[in-house]
Structure formats: C-alpha cells, structure tokens
Length: 349
Image (cartoon, rainbow, N blue to C red):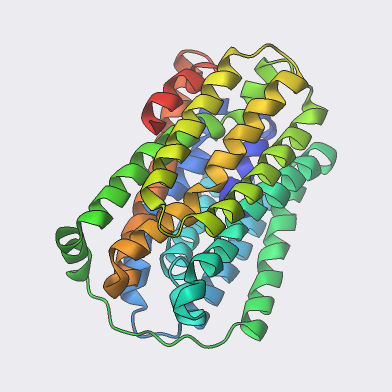
C-alpha cells in the first residue's frame, strides 16, 4: 500500500524532475489502479491451485523490484511501466489477503483479524506516505522509491519466514466471478458503494499535497499533516474493527457522511496548518474505517465464495482509485487544485 500511494506525497517533485504536469504525474496513481482492477480476478483464477503464502510472497517481491526500477528510471515512461507492475502486485495481493483472516483465526475473531490485516493499509498512511514524503523532501524522490523497494524485499523475507502455508480451499474459475455477483445481492451493493466512496476519496486525496500548498501550508509541514491523517486513519481502522459486527449498514452510511463532511470543511476553511488539520483528522478517521468495513461487508455477503467476492471487491476498489485520480487530474489541469474538493464529496455520498 505504501508503494501504491507513495506518489501522492511526491507529485510535485516527480513532475518537476521529469518535466510533466501535476495532472500527468497523477497517472502514477491512475495506472496501477487500472491494472490492479484487472489483475485482481486474473491472479485469483490463475493461482487457484497454489499455496497462498507462495503467491503473496511473489507479489510482494514484485512490488520491491518495481519500486527499485522507478528509483533508477531515466524517464516517465519507465516509471509508468514500473507502476504497471505495482498494479499487478496490488490487485493480486489484496484479492487473496483481504479474505485470508477466514483461514488463519477462529470465526469469532475474523472481524478483528481483518482489522489487523487492513491495519497495513492505514500503516501506509501513518508511516509509509509521510516518511516517503519526508525522505523525498530531504534526499529526493528517487531515494524514497529505493527505500520502499528495499522495504518490499524485507517484507518478502519476513513473509517467507513467518507466514504459514495456506493451501487453496477450492479452484476458482472465471465463471465463478459473475456467478457470485448474480447470486449475492449484498456483494452487488458492496461493489456499488465501493465505487462511489473510493472514487470520491481519491479524486481529492491524490492531490492532497498541492491542495495543502494552495491553502498556504509550507512544504515542511505537509509530511506532518499527512502523518496526522494517517494516525487518524489507523484509529478509524481499529475502531471500525471493534464496532462493525452487527452494525455494517450504519457504519457504511456514517463513513460516507464523514468523508463528504471532511472534504467540504477542508475546501471552506481558511489558509494555514491549524485550519487544515481538523478536517484532515476527520477525513482520516472516515477513510481509515473504509477497508475493514467494506471487506467485512463483502465477506458477510458471500462467506461461501470469499476469494471470488474479494477479487471483485479489490478490482472495483482499484478501478475507483484510478478513476478518482483521473477525474482529479482532469480537474486540476482544466480548473484548479481546489476543484477536486468540490467534486469529491458528491461521489462519496
């Protein structure tokens, strides 16, 4: 997740270094999102007979290699090629990892275990993106990508050493994917709400750095505010994990309202660090609750087809990331950076 979101804090630097606009630099989020949307079901089906630990380890290793390639890229085309590999890895990884709590813990602990797994998403916001932004500010964006690449290699070693074997429960074929949509109304609802909420979020969040700059926040404080956002997100993740059992519908409605309110407040508050901090905390709390809540919704809707349903969810999640970044990029290039905050809340609600 750090790999997927790293460009968010480095768009200005990369755009300047590679002589591209901020909107074009946003393709570094759009491209892996589109690829991940396709790779989620493809990887799930193609690896149907393989040990899940082996598949996840290979995908994590590919993330590390792709980030190292970005660090040494001579031009934007090479960076985009590496981002395609990131998309393959992210889509495949989450299509399997999202539902793996069902295989690792007793049923009564599944919601909390899912929160722990998705804590990695929020840890990317708490540590990955802010630290990547800080490293980029101090040493350059290439060093930031190299650091995440080395982190990917370390993750590969840790996964190989610590994760138990997880043999596949059933062989999944492509026909199982539309079948799970047709036979589970809850999955269809979950896919639709994922599209709306995630598209709205990433329309604005992809360009949060130039948004904050436009609000008069100094470059040195942006990594701090991203850290605040991430800490709030980590709190939102575990609060949701503890409370969502039996309350999924209310949780989804609350998340949409919180996200829309936070973005509207950030658009209307005055300039400076303090006015920006409060909406970012609210935004972080709301988005932090999204992955564990939506994944739990999907698992609750199709417990008999967890991997197939999860692959569809991950596909839509990443397609929505790509669409949000694309819409935001078009708004930035044709209107203004602040226009992303005006567009995003409508989609989230």
